[in-house]
Length: 322
Image (cartoon, rainbow, N blue to C red):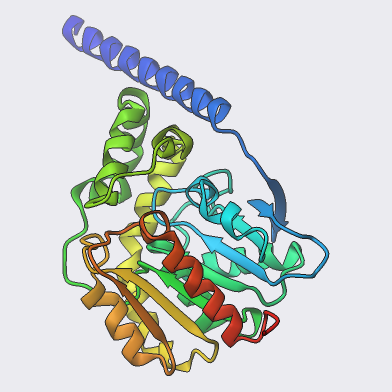
């Protein structure tokens, strides 16, 4: 009996310490990387949006959607400011990431995310923007184009997930998305894993390039390590393959201009698995394959990404010619 009581007290103490450290880590992260934009509410969900560029209707609207584990800061580091003269740029946090609220607690699907982000863009006055998605955000952008075809003018895929694949879900996502293990593991990670873990993981995603100077501290690694964000990101990632499998046969119905930018050295979202089949399937899609570039073309080859955005806008008739 005494040993049982001691064991229970130890478990209670460890639980209390874990929760205290997790809350403290989250509070530090949110203080260091607070919202930088505004909030709009779409069907009860608060969406964080950073808007840059002219507000007078003189330039096209452009929506930027970040990838897994990320937030608006990935796009506002240098891409959005570079585009803000030619476009009104709307950068959105996906649900459960950055400073946008979760949609339910089961991991928002790409179709649900597309509906939420399209509603946020519309609330900000963007009726038919050019929509760019990176990585996981590319799947959301494709879902937007397929399920809400009258609410965008053109689509730009940057290292975007588009087609089914046969590799296994990484172990960390398996654990964090598990109905029992996930809620137990997330507080432990938040409490005891340092921000440097995320910084190292991000650096690996950039390979074979290096992250730009100042990026790792700017992007908000501590935001990724919050309990709800860890859980939501894993649930989204765990459901992605089935959702793409259910959607990808409908891509040939996309009727807006499509530009695809993908690095040949991308080992996270392979060009031959995703970009090339997508380009073959969508009539008129234009694929730019960047030799030697990895998974982050919008940082490693920003001029190529910006050129693709301009082509998409031109093909949609959104920019003055000549």
